Image (cartoon, rainbow, N blue to C red; front, side):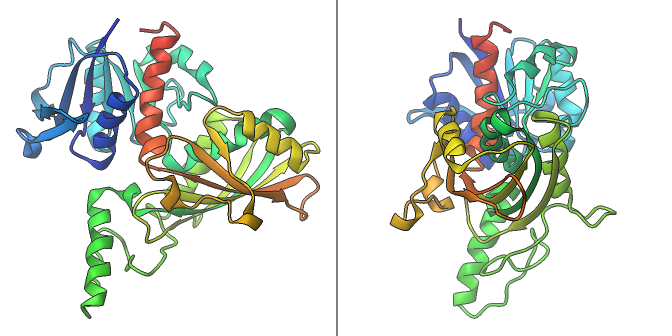
Length: 338
């Protein structure tokens, strides 16, 4: 069977990747619709190397004959239009944060918690987790199955593409401008991003954490285990694509580096690249365009009784967003939910 698929937010960075990954993976599509706001109507976007799709207006789009809608147009758009699509019988896979923590909406990373999909018909909406959460739980899952994770301390180094195309343009323009002796003028970010790092992603909450840091804590608990404690420091760095994370994990039970190495090497979707003495570790530049989550610099953390440290890298536009959404759709098909 083949399916009618709509990509909402098709002109954005993640929406474009969704279309590309649908094509690359050979997802069984009958019709593909590119949908966006009124200002993008009539534009053409690529579906593969040869097909061009004309963007349709979200406001008047009919979801009645659409089997799956991949939303990546922001929380306000999802809040308004995702329930409408779901009510028409379409399964919505939403990349925004709007529905993630609602108890009757599954929050899914297919390799980690596919069983959560069983309840998706309650709302006909499935939430795609935060990009930084996805790559971290991918690395944690095989280790949690071995020795049960108690606590995670993570520092993220997140690329500007996580904030959208305008953010990527701002990094480019500021970098070029500095070489021309022009003073950077921040618009998307709160401070200069070129040749700088910014310890703020999203707004600050009352406890001093940012909302991005809060997302990593609550989403990890919902996806993996409510008993896990997470503290995150999320930092925006002057990289176009690819998120990196320094992850320190404390376990309930003893676990050796070798046991962890074997578990990670066998886990679907994770690639262990870990011979740092030979220069074999992965950086964001090297992960761009890849599907996998890469783990490097796996080592013991001697500051806690049962601890490990690792370096986790992934393409945030792919596994951190578009690829995970398409994999959710693939799982729905493979498990006979559609």
